[in-house]
View 1: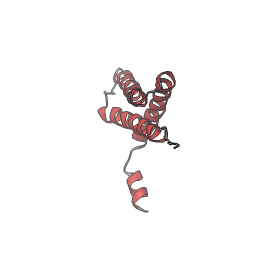
View 2: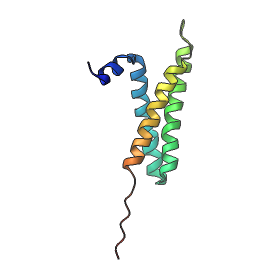
View 3: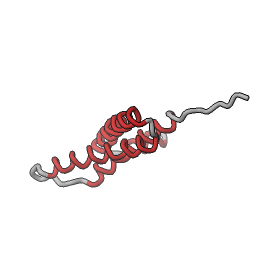
Length: 101
C-alpha cells in the first residue's frame, strides 16, 4: 500500500461523505452566484458559504437526535469540500486574455 492508500485509510468514511456533500453544495453555490454575477470572488465566497450552511444545518439536525452531538469535525470536512471545489472551479474558470497587436 502506497502513501496515498495509507492516507486514504486514515480518513473515516463519514468524513469522506461530509467532504463529498461539501463539494456538491459548494459547486451549486458557486455556479449559481457565478451565473448571476459573473464575479469569481463572489462565486468563491458563495460556494464556501453554501457548504458551511449545509454542514451547519446537517449538524444542527444531527444534534437533535438522541446520543448525537454537533460534530465540528464533520462540519470542517463539509467546509473543506466547499473550499476545495470553489477554489478548483475558480482556477479553471479564469479567462485568458489575449492581446492582438
